[in-house]
Image (cartoon, rainbow, N blue to C red; front, side, top):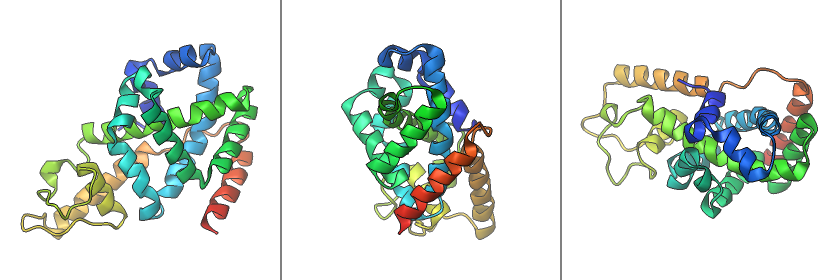
Length: 226
């Protein structure tokens, strides 16, 4: 399975950097630098959300959202109102508030050498693309494919098969069905799914300023839980 960096790089037919550069009025190297500065914080926030089922639920819903799937496929859709507003909502959820997300953008701006307002504009778009790409990649890899799951019923979590998969991984399990897998087979499937997801959320290689980012995120996450 691709990791989150590969997912971003493959977005919009592999033209994500060029498309963002055109929209933001940046050189390609500037856009790449901005994305690389934001990705470690995004991955850390996703991994933090995965610690609690209810924290991850909005991310699961976003991965199933057609607006975010479209943002992953199309540059025009990535800048649509639905995509940007949805991305803003995920950003605020992941970092606890819009102001905390602003701190992350400011940190990334210092690391990339770009203005903070450029990073703040980019962050929700990047998050929307990442959410859509994560859902598409997991589905394409067949993680928790419907053939391996009980038949859907009205009692199953909303959001389709991916929502049901994440629900089983993080504690919000769908109702048991007569055709459900045996406990041993279910455990094997669960372990395999966890391995895929851990690989997908592998953080980018450590970069300069990682210690400062870790300190900032630790404070942000602690404040969000208080």
